[in-house]
Image 1: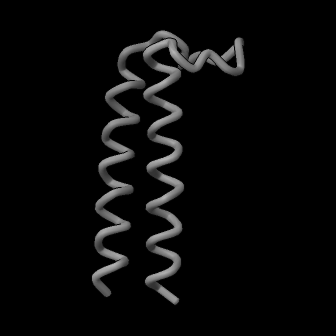
Image 2: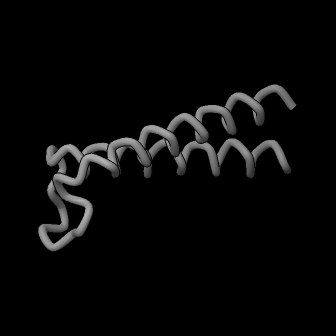
Length: 63
């Protein structure tokens, strides 16, 4: 059960990270009122979150 939860959280973290990277770079400007659009720090936060998500997926698959 822990394995499924860890992999699921990892997948969600990767997806959120990719969205944050897209919004921070301005390539994914939705919703239009988002404070994250074209803000480069959100690209960094998204990359960190995606890497943590990949780590969670790897850890969950090794259990």
